[in-house]
Length: 242
Length: 248
Image 1 (tube, rainbow over the protein chains, first blue to last red):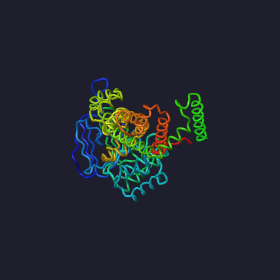
Image 2 (cartoon, chains in turn cyan, purple; image 1 turned 90 degrees about the vertical axis):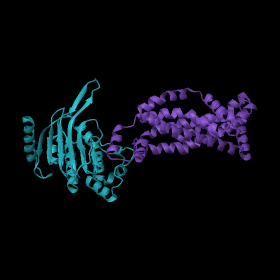
Image 3 (cartoon, one colour; image 1 turned 120 degrees about the vertical axis):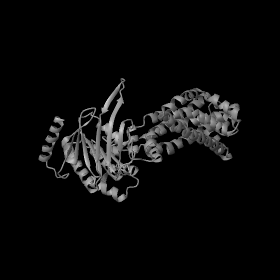
Image 4 (tube, helix red, strand yellow; image 1 turned 45 degrees about the vertical axis):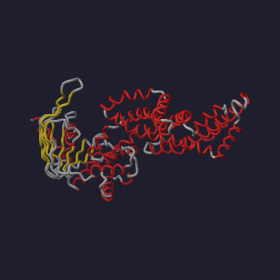
């Protein structure tokens, strides 16, 4: 069920989600779990790989409707999504890719996004001519260009080298602070989650349940590596005691 | 280098033609010069332009019908398993029906008309177009489809900007093979039941054993199709693959 929700607020109550396995029988992916995000809140979902994070995101995006539970999306349901792979249309240029996904975006807003993400000189390139880091930036620009009510990022910085991932995280923090938007980031790195989010949900292995819901108090972007390490330890111990 | 080789191989063809003509005699294989003179004669009388344009019109009409229907049905069959199972037996029957049977039946049922002629040619090309486009539709990338769903792209822009570009290589392939197939079948259709066109002229020349005129018309129409290939199909192909990385 997908009832219309309160503006900017995401509410998710899942009772059960399972797949029919190829060998017969059912594969239990998600257990009972609830997530509520206030307008403008940035949350991170952390869990071991294969725990059902991507399945959870597909349910929120409306791509998988075969589950028991309720998802209530922000009122306008404008979703900005950054998939794990960039998923750009290879036969259109960077700029055309943005225009096709966000036809109502003003040229000024698109140029500003390009400037923030360092894409200005690549706007006429085709996705095949871009490195993975640049393609990820285009996917990020596309998600922001539609001025989403809900931003969903599925492991957006995976398989980038550490310094490039760090730079992209900083750019993401800047974009979110410039135009606050309810955001859900999936990652398998606790450090990345603490660096980006106001709140970290820790998931168990499959069938996924929430084992910890940890608020992060310091403002985003001003967290030192030391603070992040302390918080990461706190979250890990919360996970172990759960 | 490439054009020099092309020119060289063309010269070789001409020389072979002249030598063969001397070996076989003017009646069985007239010289290039004789054929060229006949061609000029036909052009002066206006018959050449008339027949070429009538045939070309039939080629394009049947080609267009086959491509539009073939793309639609191919897309449907590639995307919907139920439609695929329903339509597959029909497709196999149509694929294996000899061109001659389709042509003769079309003329019997619809009369010796242009409509019957064009429909018969389109029906011959249709199943091949469907099979190719169906393969393309099966190879569509589901992850891009999901992207379009999530970003709420409209049906029209999805078809135009997400689906058709993925089908482009298949569309170019059917265009290429389709045009060459269609014009060959059009000539047979004209010979069997039309009072004009290149096929009719060649049929008439065959009755008189007029090899010169057969060659003149065959040559003229081949040139027309080469021009279409060079100025329509190849530029289209380049445009469609413009986004691919070119080897450095």
